[in-house]
Length: 315
Image 1 (cartoon, rainbow, N blue to C red):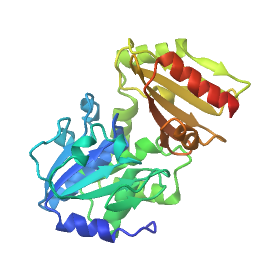
Image 2 (tube, one colour):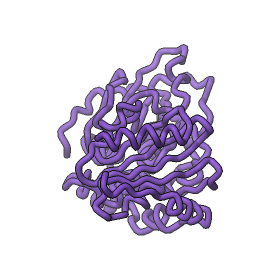
Image 3 (tube, rainbow, N blue to C red):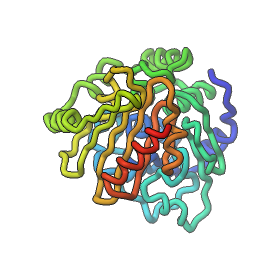
């Protein structure tokens, strides 16, 4: 078990009655799997739980048990006494976080996160630079000797597997693999989860891959490559960044510029060896991990590309 003090976190989970659980905008399987695992646990303790993640694409997580517990609408009249924010380095990463900031009733804010640039925004902060929030929650449950239900095991395994690239990334440790082993022993099904995450692509996903390949730009002398997904592209579920990062050619940094609106661009960055993309992203208001980070930029696609590539060229 990792060395982390869960006492204040555990105390609030035991004393709280009504829980709002949320995660970052553009949620991934670590975010949703962790929300569901915590939700399943709290419900087993007879707590009132509402999981809120503002997203139009929650159906992509239908392979996780209890995914229909996640709601896209904020519960305006739900007087929660505890708000748990998962997988966010700062509160602003929650879509429409103002709903939380402007709540008129008293509540405890809990921050559970694994990003190295977390700003400890919670009344209670459970943070550690670790593979995933799924693993962070696993160690909490292990510390209280929880007997993992199959639903919790499935959700946590999916969360950990996703954020470790199916246990292939540099964030995997012996603790990560031991956690995964335990979860499989408790009913998690690696094959079925891997099929759901990796072998369930639609024709639209393949159209996106084609667009990404057509738009791919390689700057071999500078060691980076990027591609563009324009707002006119179809909406798929594939993570293009995980596709292009497979390119070799002695490249270190990979970027996807996804145009959301005419003046809004989502930027995903990955690095293989040398560049700390979290530190790089912070100059543009982004952040994340040393090898994986993201930014949302309020400017045109062309201006965004120019800003990022100029900074990379200088770096």
